[in-house]
Amino acid sequence: MNEFITQVQTYINQSHSNWWSSVLFITIASFLAWVVWRIIHSRLEVLAQKTTFHWDDLLLEALRTPVSTLLWCWPATVSVGLIFQDQFGNEINWLKTLKHILVICTFVWFTLRMISNAEAYVLEQKTRDETTVQAIAKVARLFFMTIGGLTIMQAFGLSLSGLLTFGGVGGLIVGLAAKDLLSNFFGGMMIYFDRPFKVGDWIRSPDRQIEGTVERIGWRMTIIRTFDKRPLYVPNSVFSSIVVENPSRMLNRRIHETFGLRYQDAEKLALIVNDVKSMLEAHPDIDAKQTLIVNFDKFGPSTLNFFIYTFTKTVNWARYHRVKQDVLLQVLAIIHKHDANIAFPTQTLKIDSQKVSLSEGVINSHPEAH
Image (cartoon, one colour):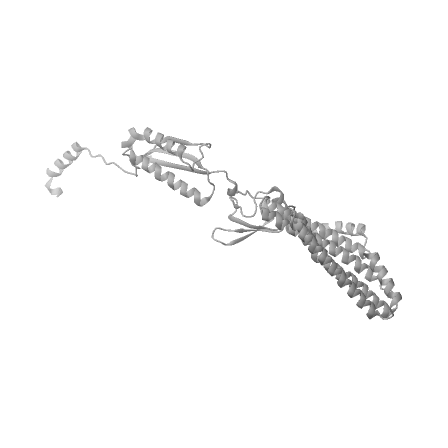
């Protein structure tokens, strides 16, 4: 395309004496090239929609606007060069640099659009971890933007080797000055690649008062929505020094409850324990493959204690409590079925009748005591 523009420019310089006619010709040529591109793009879109491969659709969508912009901006720089050359009589050297920068920016723009389209498509399919996809997309954007920036600097004549050397010394100074910022950045990288949690997970820390649902994982901080709907902004460096619990990744939820029967129901205790265990083994929401224990535990001050230790199949918080409620009600029904009952704290006062009679006799023999 560069050779074509050069030939057109040579033809214009030879055939036209006025710069405005040359600019008009270039503008018309740009418009025709843009129309041809739109027609070709539309045809390719129709063909791409007929295929089951979706990445060609993403590629065409990413190409459309950058190529259209390039078809207008590149001839515009040629027109500006003709105007300046006609006015000043010398070739404008910085226009060549501008053309290089235009190509670099167009390529980076196309790449960033392609990365965004790919990220949106992968997240829409819900076949990959959301946090990992977002991390890879951010790293890819940062990489291509850095490469584009370095290439633009080189187009201006800056030496990349000297720039990198200066960047090493400057990076040390900046690193010392922005230690907290860098620790948060690398903390975010640790979260992205170690993946202790992802967006949408319920997390909590026993070391800090942190508990809620992860809404966003940024380069500097993570946003957590607490259960009372308050946003909690946690610097990423904090997660490198605390223990984080992720209940969202539990395989089961545990039911561990103790029941106390009355001492007068001691003969029925073994039957109740067996019936409760059979009920749990047959319960559709209890995972019988996990540990399941129902045993008489100890003699309490006023109760005979037995406990249940089992796991539900669901990990959903609301569903778990419904299952737990059903289990507790069935345990209570089994206890009542055996004409037993849950004990409550009681005290028995024993009075010795002989001592009571003796005390009454002593009081009667001393009337003045009244």
